[in-house]
Length: 124
Image 1 (spheres, one colour):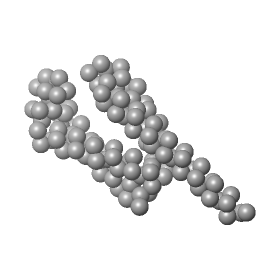
Image 2 (image 1 turned 180 degrees about the horizontal axis):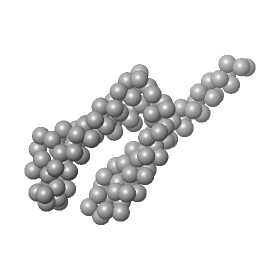
Image 3 (image 1 turned 120 degrees about the horizontal axis):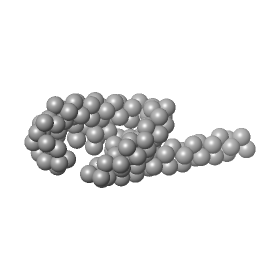
Image 4 (image 1 turned 60 degrees about the horizontal axis):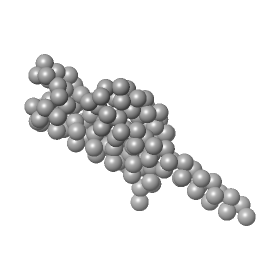
């Protein structure tokens, strides 16, 4: 069974993969949802490819239980939260990023405390 932190990463990975693929497969819908002009289409395609790749990376890290990757995502996603929050039409994405980062951080801390308790229990 995957760890709690891996599950938070998997959830974000699936959402990134879905967002990327939907941008690539239905760009007109994505432009409308994001309130972007048609001139933004090349950037939307680039964002779709990047989001698809991020989704794959996150899912691979989940499969590998790559704790170093999980830890590294927290500050990056918090920085993304701040950047997205400054753009009023991106606040929903900012909330998603920030909530995901916070859930991952809490899961990592819980696992670290649980592992420490297990080690202490074995010493006794």
